[in-house]
Length: 244
Image 1 (cartoon, one colour):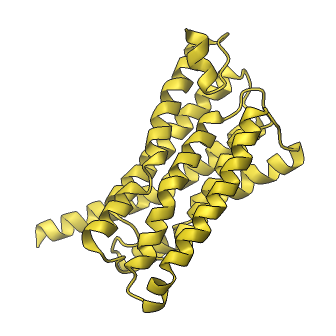
Image 2 (tube, one colour):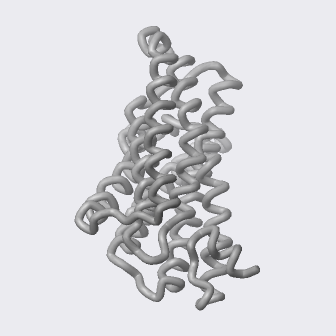
């Protein structure tokens, strides 16, 4: 029974405690990662307005970064693959393409609105192609070249970490939260926390903290610091409004 549960995320049953911790945090992380685009999607459908200060490139950077995470997890070079990461990003991307679509559809710029359907079709085709490569890597138990893996674990985490950095800087300069919904902000923060916990547990379960594992955790700590700055800004704005 335990083996069946552990096989879902390719965990080693020899180390039960770390295995169960990894399994639990993997499940939580998958749920959160899959839903990362939902708060923004709900906001867009409810308000029918993309809003002020939205950087469209940020959403595309998240899109590319998520594809990278999916491929890193499915083609991982380690015996215990980061399968949870691959599955989570695969499911997340299937929702995120609609978040991008409605971001364009309800944009204040008419040129952006006209591009909405083209954007949806292109994004869907890219996700379908990338997902097929990821599934092949999982089913056939394929591995990346070590050199390629070393590059991927630096580039793709960096993309997702700094995707909304321009919006964050702009928010801090103007001392006003903008660029995404509050729901999306808190979802991203929760995702970073749970993925770090998962990767720590995987390191113990794998009986080794590899360079790739450590690198991805470092990037997620950086990401956490960036988005926590926005929470600070929200609290500061709330206190100012309360004292008026």
